[in-house]
Amino acid sequence: MQARTRILRNLYLTRTLVQIVWAAFVIKGSLGPGITAALLVLYPLWDVAATLFDLRSASEGRVILQANVALGVLTAISIGVTNVSHPAYAIASFGAWALVAGLLQLAVGIARRKQLGGQWAMILSGAQSTAAGVAFTLGGLSGKLHAKDLGGYAVFGAVYFLITALLLQRKLHQQPLESR
Image (tube, rainbow, N blue to C red):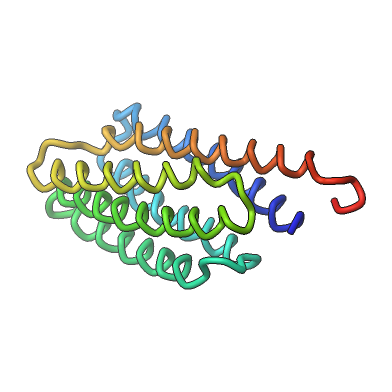
């Protein structure tokens, strides 16, 4: 169990860093439409990569994680296709992904809470992602949101990943030395 906790802690710290860097580029907003489109496609693909890494050692929520991988790939394709003809629809696609991925994260957080503990931030993150997904989808469909508006979403996600990583680190330090 300690090895799994360490793997998740390290994954969450990595996700924190990547999401902050992604948000900084997206919030800047002056990168040009091609780079911005690439960043929008890369975000769900980054989530896919992180989920695939997570799956290598996961014992809980495997089917949910696999569904998240499929969702992320389909979303990246959808963003790439819609961004060419109607960029606002790319935002709506991102929003639909955030909504469903949030529900999946919520389910995994609840399952992991029983085994690993320290998952309340992931549960909150899943709930917030779901709510943000609704707002992004509606905003994209109405043409009121732009890619730079998604930066805050990534920052909040990074904060939740950081909190969870710190909680898992605390759990590792509370375990007796012989069990580490």
